[in-house]
Amino acid sequence: MIVWGSGGDVVQLGAAGTHDCGTCQAPREYRHLLNYRYAHIWYLFAWVTEKNYFTACAVCGRGRRHDSGSFERQLGRVPIPIHRRFGGLALLGVAAIVAVAALAGTRFSGHRDAQMLLSPHVGDVYTVDLQALVPDGFGRHAWGLMRVTAVDGDDVTLQVPSVGYSRLEGARRNLGRQASDAGYYSTDSLQYSTAQLQRFRDGGRITNVHRR
Ligand SMILES: [Zn+2]
Image (cartoon, rainbow, N blue to C red; front, side, top):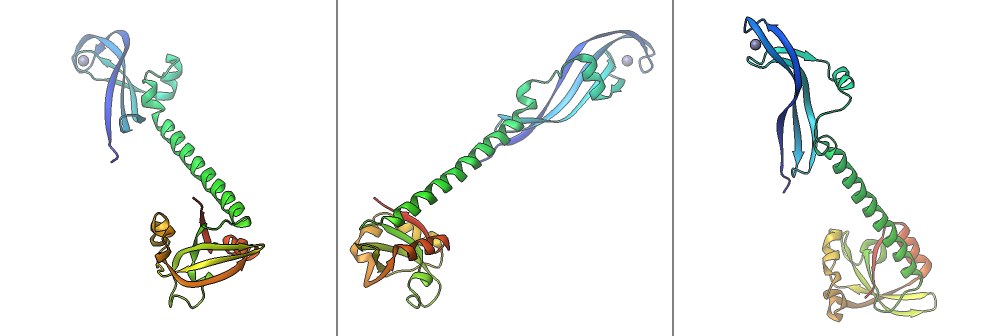
């Protein structure tokens, strides 16, 4: 669940002398102040959505609004807590780190799969596009798991599963205990060369190699 919301605050920035107030019709003390609003996610990641600097009558609150840029230059600082100004950037930073880590993970596992296809082990389970590896075996397009039962030099023997799924996720869900159960597979086997297996992987027909 994402908790988001908004808030606001008034920051007093000191006295601004005594001036005649047109609204109060009297000399009044004036103050500099900042009125700002911010939005937040989880209260951690925040950013400023609006800010207005004023010099206003301390009694009626009427006064004059300033240009934010020039007022901040005059002030020499931005009087908003840093976590409300740059929290949004922190969120972007976290999102970027997550994206980079996910990408690196995908690259890494892709590299690992390629290595495992080059040196297959008996018991490896491949998540495959059955239409490509077992043409005409499943009536219509299906994803499934194939298991290595023999490796003879460059030739790899794969068991054909007895079930296929219309979605890749369906096949992936069987990667646990079911994939190592003999009853999961039919009695049919097919033979491929390691070069063919690499081509299937490059073409996205073998999406994953699972090794215990
Ligand atoms: Zn006033």
